[in-house]
Every structure is written in C-alpha cells, then in structure tokens.
Amino acid sequence: MAEESTSEFDVVVLGSGAAGLTAALAASDSGASVGIFEKSAFLGGTTAMSGGVIWMPNNHHQHEHEIEDSREMALSYLESLSLGQIDSDMAATFVDRGPEMLEWVEKDTPCSFHIVEGYSDYHPEHPGGLPSGGRSLDNALFPLSELGEWAKKIRNDGMRSPVMITETPLGGATTPPSREVMSARTERNESGMGLALVAALLKGVLDRGIQPQTESRALRLLKDGNGVCGVSIKSGDSKKEIIARKGVIIATGGFEWNSELVKTFLRGPMTAPVGNPENTGDGLEMAMEAGARLGNMRNAWWVPVTKIPGESLFGHPSSRLIITERTRPHSLMVNRDGVRFTNEAGNYNAMGGAFHSFDPQKFEYQNIPCWLIFDHHYKLRYDIAGSRPGEHIPDWMHTSETIQGLAEVIDVPTGSLDETVKRFNEYASVGEDPDFHRGVSAYDTFNGDQSISGVEATLQPLDSPPFYAIKIESGSLGTNGGPKTDVSGRVLSIEGGVIPGLFAAGNAMAAPTGMVYGGAGGTIGPAMTFGFIAGKAAASR
Ligand SMILES: Cc1cc2nc3c(=O)[nH]c(=O)nc-3n(C[C@H](O)[C@H](O)[C@H](O)COP(=O)(O)OP(=O)(O)OC[C@H]3O[C@@H](n4cnc5c(N)ncnc54)[C@H](O)[C@@H]3O)c2cc1C
Image 1 (spheres, helix red, strand yellow):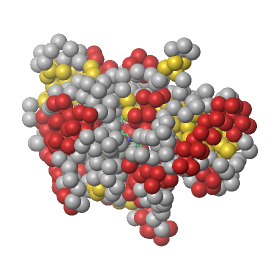
Image 2 (spheres, rainbow, N blue to C red):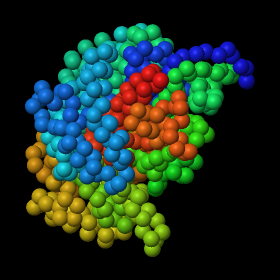
Image 3 (spheres, rainbow, N blue to C red):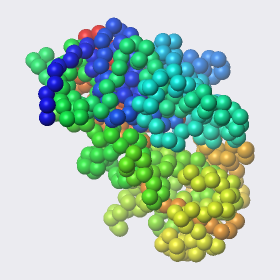
C-alpha cells in the first residue's frame, strides 16, 4: 500500500452521519480547522436513511405550541426508565445542552425543525412523559439542488419520496400530500426526513469551506506522548496519516453490521441490521486499541423487522421495519407457540426486551422468530412492509381461509393459535386487553389507525377471512454501546481519567440515555447533542 503525504487539521471527524456532521460544524464555529473522513463512497450513514426525527426535551418550539415541559420533567422521565443504566450526569448534559444545540443549529445552519404534533413519547405514562407530544421534531424539506454535485454524494436508498414525517402515517397523517404537491417538490429536487437532515447539515459544512473526504476509512488512531494526535486513513490503495492538532472525534456509527461484535456484545439475538452497512464497529475497535473504557455494550436500538426474500440494499440482504403494521387494528403477534407475548402496539425499541425473553427449559428464545397475524379487513386497508393495501398477495405473505389452516402453514400449534385469536377477539369486542393492555397508552393509538378514535384505533378483532401471517425477526437501527465519555464527549480511559485528544459521539459512543429510546428521534437527538458538545470541546483544547 502506497504511503501519501501527511495533512493536518485542528479537529478530525470520523464519519458523516448526524453526529459527525454536527461535530464538524460545532468545531468549525469554535474556530478550528476541520477534516471529515468518511469510509463509504456516500455521506450521511444511517442518518440519511432515517426518518430524521430528533427527540429534544424542553426545546424552544414547545413555547410556540404552549407545551409544558421542563428539565426536571425530562430527567424524571429518563430516570424512571433507567434501570440503573443511565449515568445521571450524561443524561443531565443531554437535557441541558440539547436545546442549546438545537437553537444554534437552526440559527447558524440551514437545518430547520418543527414539532410532530401529537407524537407521544414512547413511555408517556412514566413520570415526566408527554402523552400529547412536543419533544419529537421533524425536518423541513430541503432542496438538494442547493448542494450541486454534492447532492449525489449523499447515501440514498432510493426509497425516499419528498415528504416529511408529519405527512406520513408514522407522523400521524391520514392522507398523503396531493399528486400536484409531490410533483412540484420532485421538480424542485426536494428531500425530507433523514436525507433532508444530512443535506442541511452538509450544506452548513460546505458553506464553512469543509470538504468531506469519502472512501476514506479510518484504520488506526495515532498517538504520541500527549495522547491521540491523528489517525491513519485508507483511501483506495493508499494510506495517509492525518494529524489532528486538537482532537479526533469518533462518529463512525455502531457495530450492527459486524456479526462477530454483535455476537460478542449484544445481550440477545439480533439477526437483521437495517442501517448503513458500513457501520462495522471500526470506531469501537480503534477506541479499544487506544484503551477506552466501554459502556452500554449489551444494548442497541432494537426494532422488529421482516425480511422479504431477494430484497437487498447496497449489496446486503435488507429488512423492512415493522412499526405501524403491528399497531393497526385487526392484527396481533404470536410467538412460535402460537401465543401473544407482548403489547403489539408498544414501541419498537422496548419490544427488543420481549424478543430476548429466554425459555430455560426449552433452552430457546421463545419469541423469535414470531409472526404478525392479520385478517382480510386489515389487508385491504393498510400497507404491509411496502406492499400496498388490496387483494394482491405477495409470495412472502402466508395465507389461509382459516386460523387453523394458517397455523399449519406457519408451523405453530393449531389449537393454540385458534385459542389466542378467540381470546383476542373477545377482548377487542369489549375494547379492553387485560393480558397486555394494548391501546391504553397514548403511544399505542398514535401509531394505530389515526382515522379511528379511542382504543379501536389499535384493538379490533381478526374476524374477516382469509387470514395472513408474516414472519418477524429481531432487528436493529444501530447499536449504541461503545467508548464511555465524560460530559464533554472526551473518551474515558480504562486506566482512569480521559484519553487526551479522543472524543466520541452518536451511536459510536456509550449512549447517554442508556437503553432508553425516549420518543421518536431518541437516537439522533442525543447524537447531534453530543456531536455539538464534542466538536466544541475538541476545538477548545
Ligand atoms: C429506517 C431507519 C429510520 C430511522 N429513523 C430514525 C429517526 O427518525 N430518528 C432517530 O432518532 N433515529 C432514527 N433511526 C436511527 C438513526 O438513524 C441512527 O441511530 C443515527 O442516524 C446514528 O447516527 P450516527 O451519526 O451515530 O451514525 P451514522 O449516521 O450511521 O454515521 C456513521 C458514519 O460513519 C461512517 N464510518 C464507519 N466506519 C468508519 C471509518 N472507519 N472511517 C470513517 N467513517 C466511518 C459510516 O459509513 C457512516 O457514514 C433510524 C434508522 C433507520 C435504519
């Protein structure tokens, strides 16, 4: 491999997702010269493929909507969900500095956010939770034409239409924008969601004269007597040494696409990563080699998914998120014994816990794989993993005229599935689910059928044949364990103190909210906040 000349920056950022781009902007605004190095040919990482929603307690947009929130409410909410896994200083730092980051990023970059009205927190009944929303913020549309040739450099999975989350069922909308509106947006080359977030952050970066370098994979941290002083980068066939006068910020995402690290660290099976395939834990391994103290390694942002045979994305088998599909009426989920095991309408991240429930006698994870079961009424009315509502039955969807027949097709005990559906239908007929309380939480109904009010938005019987089933697996939007940091984003050393010159942000760091996904945007909100904190701290060394 050829060695190239050395270049120098004050701050070197590894990775170009929400965490990396925000870190670069903050470092630059604090007077540092900044280099961004991205392993992939495309910028934006999983962030560009995401909904782009950020969760930000106590944010300034709440004032316009007269939503009551406070530092204390946010902290008691996180504390109530902590299970002893949240470092209270880190949580307080997120809650305190997040609103500051948001005001700055909206004032000094093209980023613009608005509240997703009514989007309940994910555990709204916990102390300090907001059942009527206010903490989840959506991106404005962004015209990619403002980026010139750089627009083609953003990771685009080709599944993005120019809409905002607020205009989709996930954001509570019942009707999409009109065809005229959509074609005008397409003509203006507008994007929404994560693509818009990355585009707006990238515009800010380019406006500051920073040119991110793609196909530039960080391999190893360089150290001298004062700590980390740079990084070795592989670019094509050549390798270069980049000197970081003030600091290196690891923002390389999680390790969800590295099956060895997944097996080593995660607390239970995760068979379907759904984000950027280049997130293979490089940052974690570099930090380990530098002697970092690790945290939150067992956790990830969990999500139920289905795999559609033959579908792939960026050359890897892909999976589709199962979010609103689980929450709509006329459906339920069963495990391989044909019994329900959780509130199907609960939030996707917490459902990871149900997937990791272990039967010691059978010595198996009893709830994976599991099945989403629905009836014909549902089939005619709702999208299912990208399949439009209607009579067409894709190959990957199992079907039968009877529940017993469906049980045979998917190989679960016939009597058991029959009994489960009968019991569920009785509950649905009286609008109450004593087993799992489906429909009681404001979250359940927000993600149900928004055109129906009350518990029926999510709880209605499966009584219209034929019946259908799709297989569900345990997936992840990204892992969230990694080097532990202090409240300034400085990576802690296994020997005590910090590793001078080394910072981390986003999914590459030990998540400041532990295993808690507070509400929609619960990963990108903290990622941008700690990107901001690390960028400023590195620049001011
Ligand atoms: C479909 C989908 C929807 C989602 N929606 C939301 C949402 O609305 N809100 C929310 O909060 N979360 C959402 N998530 C999760 C969220 O996208 C991620 O948690 C978040 O974007 C992670 O940001 P990041 O900056 O840490 O990492 P990423 O955005 O993944 O960026 C990491 C970057 O580092 C690069 N990299 C890796 N290794 C190296 C290396 N060695 N050298 C240089 N670069 C490297 C990667 O290529 C990548 O570009 C969603 C995820 C998916 C898949």
